[in-house]
Image (cartoon, rainbow, N blue to C red):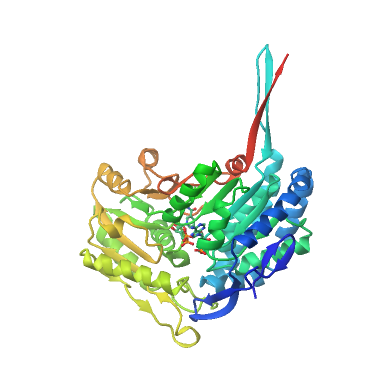
Length: 477
Ligand code: NDP
């Protein structure tokens, strides 16, 4: 049974109500989640307010020590965390073990160290010296999605805590399990009461209570663009600080001179890793005409060889889709693609594994061709194992198509012509550009999107700046 983590304790929700938590690989409920409401959020905010004066004045070295302790406890229990993440989300266990949980550990370790290089500005003239203090914002809300549950939650919590804020966090109600395990790790690590509070529940209830709470001064949110727009409409009139990491419809641009084997291998990953449920996946693949047919055949063949099935089996490449509702949404987009005149080159259906997972929510990885760049299938985020492939002839044409959606999160460019790569990188409307690679991450870099993919940047100093309020002090000489 999952419980809220409020004021340093594991507590039942005030309503005493719970809802089911599902294992998508078997299509059955396996636990219950607190159905928290504004009363639980109020308790968390009150606890955070009591904790804030001492926590914000705690030396950075001590905050670092605590964060490293939490990181080491997650490391000690890595196998348990990884299994919990896989069961909750449907992702392959080996992915949770090698990517999700190690990255959650790294998030704590990275910010525990980054804080010591975080300097503030000073400006001097013969007349006066200005210096800037960077104080914690206060109580901040962190709301995260289901696709990379602990990875994205800790990406928000770690910089918020290390800069001296107290946090009210809400993981996605669909994947709450590792956030609960994190609560236990924080208790064991000796995290002071009220510094981090994790309140579970529905976005429309618990999430809304966090967003609209007048004493929560900043919100960091990762999730869908529609939800982000709603959050902004509530938070902006209250003048809250906002960081929004939203949806994407990322272009993957492949030129004929690309390093073909490396490109093909990476494109299979950038299309279907984590069931295509990564905001950075390249879902619109544009291929230069001379290699289009070859790429199409090779890509389909490689994709057909992916092993779909039980996430707990080591040989599985693609696990379950996170929920029945999401699986149906993705299937409805495959139907839309057909209605729009697309040809399904492979996949296109629900997949039914044999044995333990026969009632699970699985989809075949799907490749579609023959669609115009501006149809709905190519404009709207699907967020599943579905990609389209489209030929192009010129740089101008591919740039026009790549930039034609409302989104602007990430892009991928494959070419050995470095001048062309840099030209396109400069002109493409995304916050992140990968040249001849994908998902190569350096936590010091600014992370985030443009257009409807978000506002603000996470990562490195950007995150430390977001979670602090600058105060300029002018001293007359
Ligand atoms: P949602 O927007 O549905 O939900 C994200 C979080 O917000 C969840 O915790 C959700 O709770 C909560 N929430 C929902 N409604 C409200 C509300 N009214 N007020 C406050 N909180 C609310 O996104 P998904 O969980 O479906 O995640 C998938 C989306 O996330 C995709 O669009 C994807 O592109 C995006 N994403 C973006 C990334 C980026 O870095 N830009 C990275 C990863 C994902 P609940 O689950 O209970 O509804």
